[in-house]
Image (cartoon, rainbow, N blue to C red; front, side, top):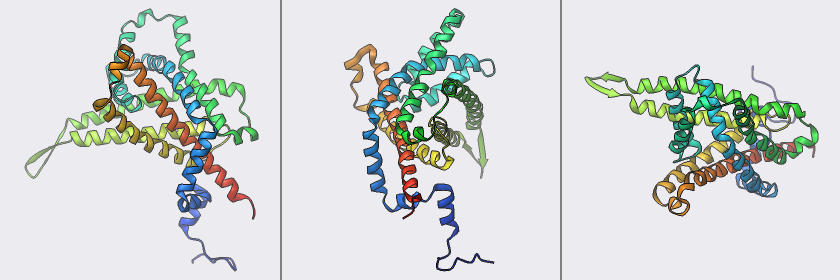
Length: 311
């Protein structure tokens, strides 16, 4: 039997119920006024000094990325071939630092070739530097989600342990991605015979690898929005921020690749510092979009609190 609407109220469809229960009542407001929502998000991002926060996150990410990669490869090389790990890192570092993944992997390989010189003090130092970016990112999220901090505060031990747990999770994710990428590359070397002709699966393999990268990007961004802010965040809200940041970064990444390949004269200006400058610029843009996605979630929650207030 069809559900009977309450007296004086029209029946509500399943789509409307899904929007309210999963996406929240503010989803309809965003659909009706997307321009106003985007403008309010940018104003709030500017008010929170988002560009300044992104610069701090990018600077500490630059200090953290090489120690983090070294520790990850050393740990995972006990389970997977080191060459396969470096190949996977080179592919997906291109998503983070377009055009500079080869330089980063070259420095990483040079360090790993002399891993016997790594002492206990150096390991502790690398562990410390590898967590700096997560610590600063948590502080930046605190500024954006200030309304959550007023309601609930995170214990200092949780903040201290959180970066190490997240690094462990990223290492496990890299291990799984390496295994899956190896399988997809093996598929790309196969052929399919149809109607007397042989069709290579190389294009299919490349498309699957790209989709794997996009899905991994959205998953990592969503997990950041779930873990870093204080308090409990709805998965649907975190996914909205993750998809927003991923789409913006994909557009920006392709623009950066085109710019550095055609118009950029950065190597003439900075010389031997080119790699560091380009990596820092890419990380700052990525951090800006990451925090902008967080601001989208914060503004979305603000709309939810406004809609929840009685008239």
